[in-house]
Amino acid sequence: MRRDGDALADKRARRLQVTRHLLAGASWATLLWIAVGYVDSSSAVDKWLTAAEAHPAIRGLVIALLLLAAGTVLLLWGASVSYATLDVEPHRVPRTIVIVLMVIGGFAAGLVYYFSFVRRQSIRRT
Image (cartoon, rainbow, N blue to C red; front, top):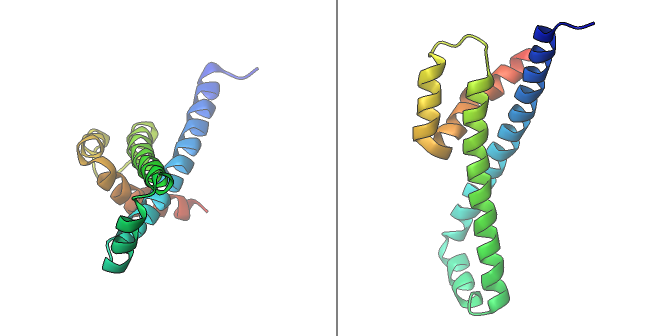
């Protein structure tokens, strides 16, 4: 029979793995949304979208895409805070400071945290 401590450690490891996958997906998706935003800011695309937004279906599609992008950014932020709280490996910076930076920094801090720490950490493990 397994001890309760082992069961809790396994449950925490599973949560950490799921959170890492959510953080990875949300980070890459956020980078994609940033790229789409840069493409949208070009004058030719902006003129086309401005003309196309007169059609209600296109306006609805743009609103749906903006809501999807906002949901992606919120998922990134939540997953980065969750991962920072669940990760028990020692860091150079105390975990409390990392969590405070995640909460204050929003999605930008989540992107930096994923690409500068979590991704490198998972690459080292494999």
